[in-house]
Length: 362
Image (cartoon, rainbow, N blue to C red; front, side):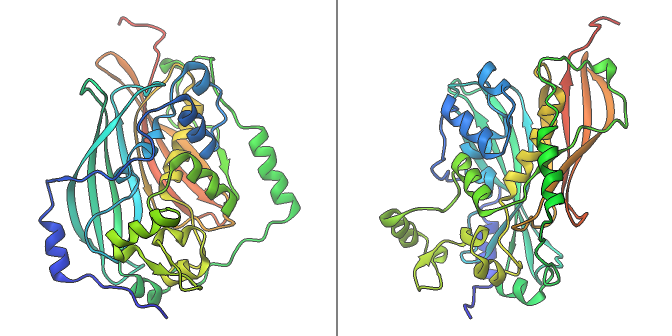
């Protein structure tokens, strides 16, 4: 059985020395929110809203495809597994077709955390600021990963009791009907005055998760370490800890936990699982469906709570938590959560939306 590195005090001290410093930016998957890029991102997260093409705007979470660090890329602690755990986006403007955005990141914090998944875990948080060609800030985002020792996570076996879900025909039919009934607010304006605290958002379904749907997401998002042929060997030459032999003795990156069952089990998960940013984007999709074309998403903060395993179905839900007037704008705060077919909450968070007002004066 492959043995993986452990967290050493020396490596941890080296990583702590980077706190507050700008981190070298890996090459992004997308640099420009082109029409094709917007379409591929929307398709990758299963967002069928025609508004993005019609208005030449991008779903706000396309920023995941425009920066590796906000998507879960981490520095330091070579060979120590990184599990993406959440992002808090704060947008200052829409992302329009043709926008070129650059993310600049600093290592914001490094916290040692208690973990039921591994005996030693660290929360590694970055702050990424996205600017356009004029230098104007479009979005600021904090993202975090948990660094866990792969061997100890495997030995703890937190997820060992989870059994793969087998779907009956009536379950698949329920999912099909939910997709068919998905409610997109669209051009019907949702006014701030009409929103009631406690009101639920129309739920959306995602899944069942398959390797095919993971590939579809990667086509829009770009991945962190997936490279082919000589580019893969170049990557392993620069970062030897990313080279983990597969069953044929061929080096492949740790990112293959998303489709490679033996490696997923080796890091303590019973099956391959989704990419965390995908779940954040799903909850963003829930919100943009609800707010309509005239709404503005200004914040989306989501924590990824559990693994979303192959075969799992995710139901994205929300409710209105509060409404407020802020500098004359009608703001709505939404509570969000994603639940699987085992009734486990696999993500939760909040969103802040600005809606049009029927009256602009007191």
